[in-house]
Image (cartoon, rainbow, N blue to C red; front, side, top):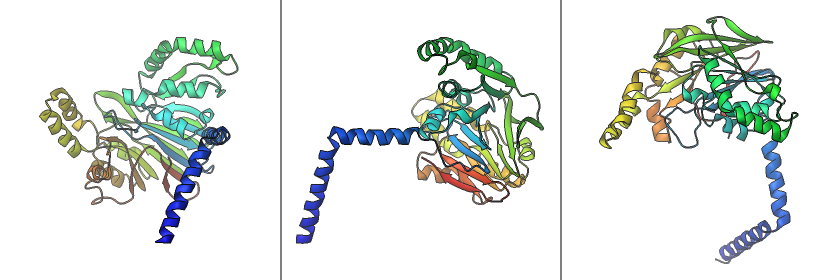
Length: 352
């Protein structure tokens, strides 16, 4: 009993001491400086000799707390490439201390809002104090120039104000805006830098057309990103023998439950949306079948509709996948896939 009383007393003394110290300005300033240094230090988890992919947005237009809309960062060599830029994804990149100066281009699978809404924030963070040479390079399907011109018009005054406030060294107007490139070459390399080769292929996302997927090849490793699509032989052909396939996934069995709940709540129009999108995407089981037929080594589900908010929903979301496939991952914001060169290794982790 004396030992317990002693431990309780000691604990209370320590808690009181910590509380008292936390009120001292010198301690507060020290903790603040440590926090700032940690915040501004660059992300260090990308290996140099590998093809890597970081999920900067695993969600969809159906909101989920603290989950960004679709975005994937590819690292090849010293350069970063962004595939889609949905809402909240740039905040994730900033939180993870990604070096924005290394982002060389953006690839858009299609032009729905949840794939483009963070483009202005991506532009800002690659422009201000990043010394980007020239405009932000953006590649996408027909219509991409219309999108980027619209953003430039909407943010025209913002560009001017920041230039006047910060000056030419930090906010040079010569580098402001987007350089939009329409992808009109499919199923062959349309973008190549050093050992990186990028191929675009068409997917099926009617009435959104054209909608694209991308294959990234670097050294002897490969990553394929499906974009938004229903089950498609085109994806199978493009992903053939890839190391990793990032494929969108929509749990129609969960959406049906959500639809019924909305109808019960007399939210009929929102329920109709759930019905409309049932044939618009790929189910997890279908994505697993695609990965099997393409002989893909590892499958990563992303652009999750609806995003599973807890472990129970996650289990329901992927129901049936284990029956037909091994080697798959249900992504979260921060899922990191690393493919070392000259190796068959696939390293998967989660950063926060």
